[in-house]
Length: 108
Length: 485
Image (cartoon, rainbow over the protein chains, first blue to last red):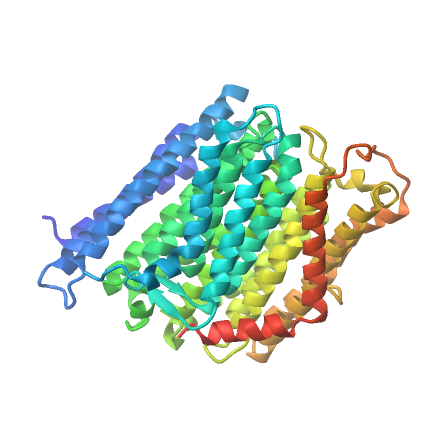
């Protein structure tokens, strides 16, 4: 069930869903959530690879690197979403909209 | 368990200095009078950047690898580290007056500036993909905040939002690329990735995602959409810092990853055509879009997209380990970061309280009212256009020659044509400044902002020096690239 290939396919699918959400959805909050989805999909890949390299199947055992990477990614993602929401609040105060289509002051 | 010795701490010094400076700024801010100019914060920021400069100079020499190979203090990283620390220092000098005018003379502003600088310096010395990721994010998250720091201006907040959304999207791609590379090799250290055969699909897919992520961060076409909006909306001093520092740090990591981890012939054959397209598109689209702009900051944003293309010409035409292309990129990014920062320093100087000086038409007759500012702006624009005896000319010459020497004739020709077209939009503001009657009022009555003048003077002097006597800087760039292995 949880083979390396299955995990990687699942991760790629979730990543694609996230990327589609950022491109297609017209709500900045949902776009933020989609970005988080992308990062978490990558975390899944990292964990799957870490498990693979940590096991006896792989020639060199360096499974911890992937796990450390996931921890770092989670910290960065948290910082990123905090900043993103803060910017969104500043934006919402000015124009009472979360539609990226309304971001039209800068053009050309 | 490797123990933390003096080598570890020495290598970390250039990153620690601005980091501690940022903390000191935040701790000092509450004790300062609200209504008065917050000069102590400027002094702390400048002091910590000078400490970073000194640390970079102290490390200049043989390659030192520390933290189990995560960080490398070699000439390659230090070379661009100097550019980054200088750009940050000039930005702080110009901010002393500018931040007050824009109502952001606060601890957050200076501490974010220093945190971004710490991230950039980390990025310049990053020797594994984890450090590359952390450096990029430390830098980017701080710069997103800086872009929107004048939060009363709707355009500033909009710029921050657009920059943030596309930047975070790009981070996803970058991270996925790193994950695939880790999956294919089991390694994140750059020189160990190089030992693996580059023809495996998983590794190539990872490299592709990595290129997309880096393409966004350095603003190469077709991943440039954020750049014009972010540059136009962000406050001028921050825009200059973004254009100079973010790009220098981005190129440092980009080049190091490509040369160290994917420098083998098979791998280079995979990324060279992709970067060829990015370089050609960036030069063409950047130059043509800049022609139509009426806003000076937006024009400079498109010009920075074109300049990303010129630098990428050097990356493509690197000619591997032996070629001069990579050294040409280093020299180009050094000169570019000074000459692109310059115009923004002038814009920051000319801006009035709460209002940016950004329309090209407002420049009419500037030479009559503000002769020094007009002369400096002209010098910066001439250098961006690549007209001798400025540094911009030497940079372009070096990059195009390296590309043509290693057989990328087409790219060199596109670059030269783009440069010729670009002369039009760089000369237009100069014509307006010197040959038209003044239209707008300039704030000549305000007290002279000496710090800002000093920053502009340093940038102008550096451009002239690098243009007339480039041999030392070029020799250092050649040594820097040799020292990578």
